Image (cartoon, rainbow, N blue to C red):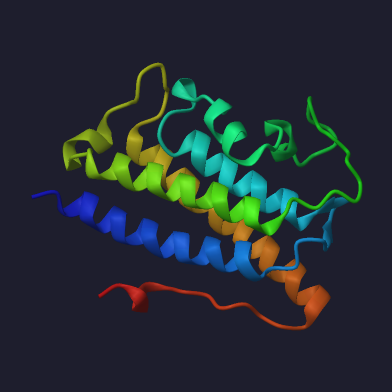
Length: 169
């Protein structure tokens, strides 16, 4: 039995619930360091898409066909190469949801194919183990959920729902 994979799958689904809460309800237009929140949420989803499994075996072309958003919108710092300023452009919520749906399905399929033993192995051409990649994305995604949450609270004076361990049956 793959007890660790089962736990990771449960925790990943809890993470997705929190990500969807931000994507569906956060203030997308509020600004964080001169970039609107929709870009930070796009960055969060894109990072899960690219880094949860193997960044060296990643192709954005299917996502572009699905949502029509340039991958460079995931670059959220003016100091990074490829940054697109695009002041006033807010990524539509329905495109963020569509991308999140795609990533959720992709990751759930990936987890179904893993065994506990696979977690200590490195994906092809990757310097990190599968478990390191998964944990790094948990950390990164919750960091961005927190940023979105506080930015939304600052603009609306309301907290969005947070789901924790009590969700797991």
